[in-house]
Amino acid sequence: MQLGIVTLGHVHAEDLTALTPHFTRIEQLVLDIAPHDSLTKHRPELNRAIDAASDDWILIVREREKISDAVANEIAGAMSDAKAWGFRIRSIPMYAGKPLRIGVDDGELRLFHRRHFLRRDELAVQGTVIRLHNTFHSITFDSVEHHREYLGKNAVPHSSLRRALLFIRYALGARTFDANTLRYLWIEAGFDSGGAR
Image (cartoon, rainbow, N blue to C red):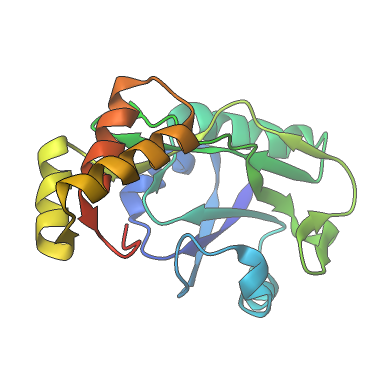
């Protein structure tokens, strides 16, 4: 089997190595767009990348996402079984080695057969779309210290009152009691990072 990978932002080759045992050839096409932008905002660029690919199956990977052995196995199985022409894959943000519990992610179309890809505003394929069981992991910060160091260099601190108010807003929006997620939100609320990360 062969696979074309469209990468958004800077994706390291080692983040894709779990795929290599399953494919005789992997072709990487790089899109120089903001890694978290909606793909519908960049349809011309995405269409050109898909047209340039020489493989029938296309996988989209965003910056900071890592592909585990489990998701690589499921991708290879989904392609060989061909029970659908498109597959949604969820991406779980990881913070200090644990998942962040922020919002509900139903996944987005990330794996599809290019002959069934529809060239309209939203990402879609002609035919069945199935969500894969396994997920990508999107690495935010490896540790709390790394998070604080990054914000200390790239953001402006908020006052204590503003931090408390922002934290309450973030926590209510997240609807979680997960300690790791609340710690992340508390640190984020302390700085005006301008949405940099």
